[in-house]
Length: 149
Image 1 (spheres, rainbow, N blue to C red):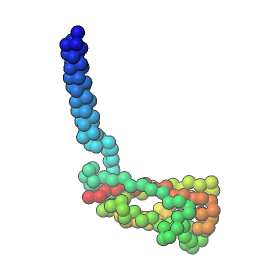
Image 2 (tube, rainbow, N blue to C red):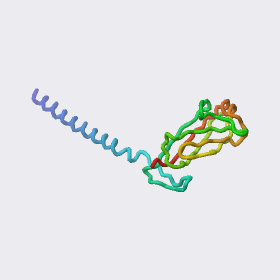
Image 3 (tube, helix red, strand yellow):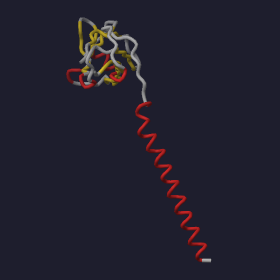
Image 4 (cartoon, one colour):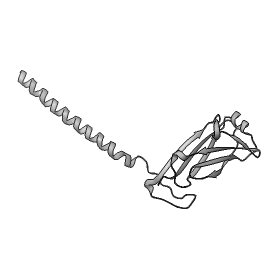
């Protein structure tokens, strides 16, 4: 009786060891192969007209809150408001494609005023002050698509 029980325990132990190894092998395969399939970013055109290898394609995104302080805060410019965005940390080697949108209860339209590999700025289309942008809680959400090599 005890021999049969011992044999059953050993058989079960071997089964679970093989099962765990298969699960581990599957998991390891998914982990190693997955980065190649996680994201496929294709950039079809760029501001400078050059298209680089797909493996160099990069997305960088962020937001600037209306309460931003320092150099990148809302500022006044000839009756309108503008904001500067430092994107040096993105690592773009050329001017990226940039999109922006505003979120807030009473925000005016904006446009991209300047854009290069390391920064861009936005300017309101309507006459507003930086104080109005702050009091209207106008946060800028942005995305940049470009190349890092």
